[in-house]
Image (cartoon, rainbow, N blue to C red; front, side):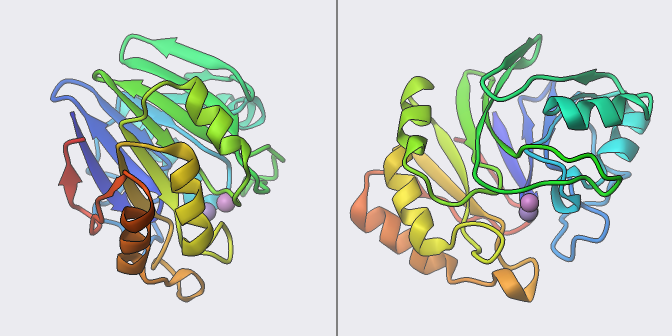
Length: 225
Ligand code: NI
Ligand code: MN
């Protein structure tokens, strides 16, 4: 499988047949690698309802027919838009033909642009034989170790590092150690001035202090975990 960083916290997973998008914030994203009308999607997975994550979900799902997996309060709002939704809550797993996604805790806040208050989540995705953990927007918390341990070997962790709205690159090093993924891709940095950070220093710190390998992707770049 391939993972492509679309900018901010948005990623595209593909196995050549099926495409899964996570947090497709493209319109209004100064770092977006693609526009909302040029991505394909069979499924869209959401960590939470903030505009920089919900993003272009409605437009992409309406154009492509993609199903959406999001925590129940967001799913209910999206259902009213006519989208096909799956509505787990924290701890729940949605199994689909393309793979599965489990919603796990993340320490953050969230309200959608239309006003639905929702609890943020991390996503543990099984796709094309790989386990990918998108942490969502979270602060550091010690249960990351418990959550990751329950998921078995994690091939790839997508970790926010920008600070201000999430944990910063120093706390993210500790998060990476708790998770112990084979590979880490940093995200949620550099999009806006408030979340600029030294991502190469994050990479060096993680690799000095754990066995995880850090892959820094520019928006638009892909990687095969
Ligand atoms: Ni957020
Ligand atoms: Mn965010």
